[in-house]
Length: 117
Image 1 (tube, one colour):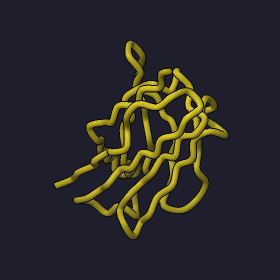
Image 2 (tube, rainbow, N blue to C red):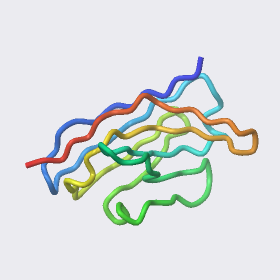
Image 3 (cartoon, rainbow, N blue to C red):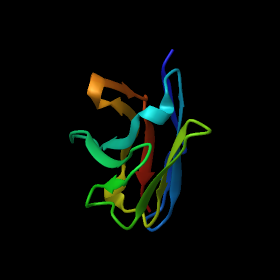
Image 4 (cartoon, rainbow, N blue to C red):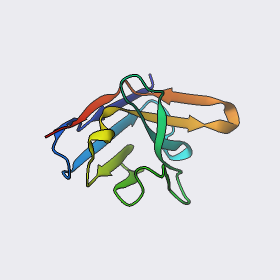
């Protein structure tokens, strides 16, 4: 059974930091592109950052220089280090695993992040 379980969300102050984790199971983690998406209230879901098993990471312009995506293939886990948080980073953050050649994609249930003074 495929599972993507996000954790680490919560409340942070502007300028603060949070670290999100996504624990994966039930599929060959190493072969998948892993990504973080987010959806703010009243807005569409957007890609935040992506990391292939090997190769370059990519980031949305809005988080470049503040967020860092990483993965530990030995632990089947992906991370998102979020620094210098802004109120506009408030959203539910979702973990995604994709194997585009076969059109396979999996989603986690999301973890909420609220940035507020």
